[in-house]
Image (cartoon, rainbow, N blue to C red; front, side, top):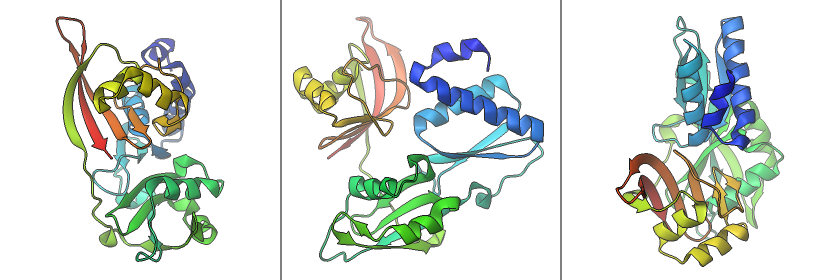
Length: 260
């Protein structure tokens, strides 16, 4: 990657940029497709930017279904025609006693990651309030099937499902436009959820906030395009567009907001 690519992104994103550089080199030298792990929307945005700037290669994202948030990327030379099975994604359903217990996104994810497998091998976790399913990388599917027998105190088993058996996820994202004085994390949270800056700071410093699925304890962290911020007990915010500034120098944002 040429050096000035780095200045457009955060310091902690530089290792990811280096990886993308390696993937592109590999496809170019071997003239064969490369499949990434599951990427979050921010990583997908960085990847797309880098490919468009640095190579003639083609790419396609897929996460198991149309609106998937976490997706794998196939990078390929222009002769190649990608097929759905190239993305190597399995759909697993969590079978559990629905009448007597409830599952949550956090518990399901916690259990999966506790098997010792990295977060990047798991795609979206979807639910219609009763049933729960998860998209996983094919290479770890059978390991996960054998490993997971409990989620919290609930006995479960995982079973493979065909794509035709995918549930329709219930999603209550709303689109909201807002203007804020700065892109600081504490500022964003306090303005979207209408809580004091102090309260917002406490939530962040006590570890209740994640940016792109990673805990972030810095109130002054600056959010950027396609970041996803989750606030335990409140919901989630996605920065969908940065729409410039107002006359008073405030930032105009288009957000996706999920309220608990």
